[in-house]
Image (cartoon, rainbow, N blue to C red; front, side, top):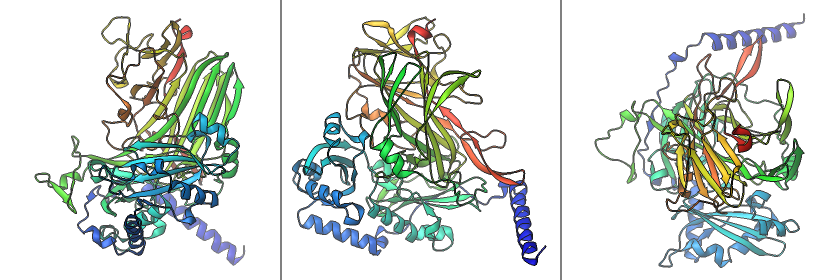
Length: 625
């Protein structure tokens, strides 16, 4: 054996010994990490002299002094057609309508993105025009009113096709604001102090992901906030720097544990087929027929994979089904107790609170959106194209399923996520909407809440019922919009069904809803879902929704904004919302919603402990037998 080969062999052997020792003999209890909140104690003025922020503020002031409320995107953030669309919108009175208050004073607005419009953001009228014309979607944000305006522009005809406004909703941020958030996080004195020196850009991720801590200004004053995260896998910890882009400062920082990981920094086989996915599944609809089902599906800009216009044996069943968000909240076991809650806490004149649980805990986290790999700033992106495979039971085909895999590029490293959208269609007419979480996330104490929007097409006159819990074998009809909690149910019809959606004129036509209680897959721990029923309205999710609600207010799911206590739904077109709540688990032998890279047979292998959530819909003529 040559000298070079001996040296190489020795290096490999020492590396394997070191990795084995780390994995099998290091004690997590020895970690010095203490979950805690770090409140900023410096004035926001320290950031005003950073070159990127100074330039940004100067540009905002120039716009306002010249009588223009919107800070436009830089040309480098758009293509040539986007530049045309922006120029048109900055002169369009309907688009500019919400840039002033009632006294005519200008309010600070930023153009956030202008990109080619994909199918899922278009109304049916615009979709027809955009089949032959180039159309672009533009989003702007009003920092004063915390609202977003969306416009669709026909750049061939230089016409604004539609303008929609979304109160108390925030879009994905511009590249310019992402760089500003990175600068604030990298230069925050509190971050430097916590890390024992200047942080490194390479250790930072998630700078464009909106994040928050309960009852901070990000939620109380509805400021636009993002969460650059510094991850240190060797120390099993991460520092979250919540950046307030409304006030341009660090709002708060938070330490959290990552859990042990030996995942390599780069996995070479993960190559996103961006152009193929965009051209075939984002910019046009796809169709499939099997087992008496006909479905149409597409990848949306931020609402994951969507199934539309599904029929069974020629009868309409689904108008739209999709998972619009994954809310991810992390539970801090301690830290809030170090705050003096006998008096109000203020940061730069703004009140900050933390919600304490039974053990002095509080919550912080992310809202994850799944979207197209191009013309979208969603963080969790498609991994290859949608797949269709047979559903098997006892070796026999009983239907098929449609699957879309979404991953962060470096999953399963800590602070990277992987979700699957899965739609199961059975040959008896049943179907199931499924969200699969394959970890790993940013910690071992996460609460995941996917928001499912399911618009059935039982008829034009639909009725919704809940199975009675008072001991009688009957159902209660809902007359107005409302919500219900699966976790409170003690009785199920046929020991399966809790809800049903039927045709007002034919009670035998419709579907039972069977919530997941762990019966669908081995080891499943159930959904503990909150459900909502709302009257169908086009601007409540028919096109792509922006982030819905808070990641961390566990008393709210985000759908509450659509509830009106007096809104009549009896015999109307209704929408069923289903929001499961599951906790991950990293304990050895009890893993759930978790992933890691482990040493097996001398090699590193990715191991997954998935959790799947979602209800089954069973035709009444089948389920009642």
